[in-house]
Image (cartoon, rainbow, N blue to C red; front, side, top):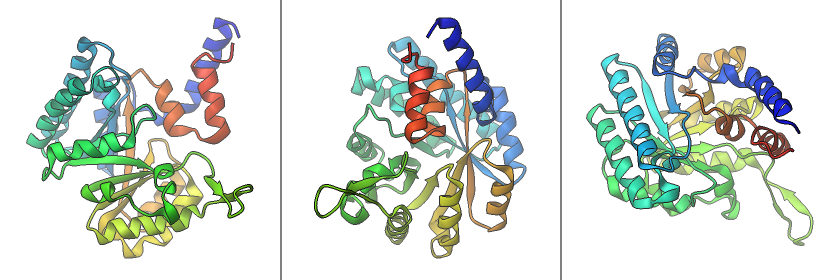
Length: 293
């Protein structure tokens, strides 16, 4: 594939995903968050600026998140902050990243803003759980947990480490999860909804505020229909640009809803990780990262 072809495909893909991105500047995300808040919808925002390999880039990301927190507070906007440890240099030095996270958490605590630490394939999930002890009692730190991680446990049992947090975000599985059957040969489909119910119920019983993130309309509809027993500790989150009609129906159900709002120029990793799944995700990754030459 030539560079011109790759560039054309990338532009075409951007046209498909741009409705899910608030823009490239802080002003654009503030405008989007305000519009959603005016409709009584809460938000979670993230800055699309990926892996920070140098101290200068780490500092830039720290300052970007800290400043947007201050602006949200000044404007009295309802918005959580979602960040990736790789943005703080974790892949190049854990201690450096933790110190950077300390700075952002300090600002968030001052303005009473919740911080979500996103799951990343390059970072072991248990490492995210370990970080919680550093801010024990804070109550403003939450962690993403891919449902694939939960599926690894027998019958969807909840790892004890999850129960130490006050805020958990369950991330939908990429594709249909499977496990081996009793004969260890034929794959056996996992009852996703059943495990979600069990997981949500356990977290709710433990008093943990739980968010479910997904763009799967059918799955969300099923979960919302069964959520009446957990409404106190449960909300659902969808990406910006989600089906407007379906979202309106969700709001009418009186279920707590949130919109995940991304902004910034580094949209490719976001498009791959948040908006695609299964085989489509593999193809998107190959094309957008230039692996299809």
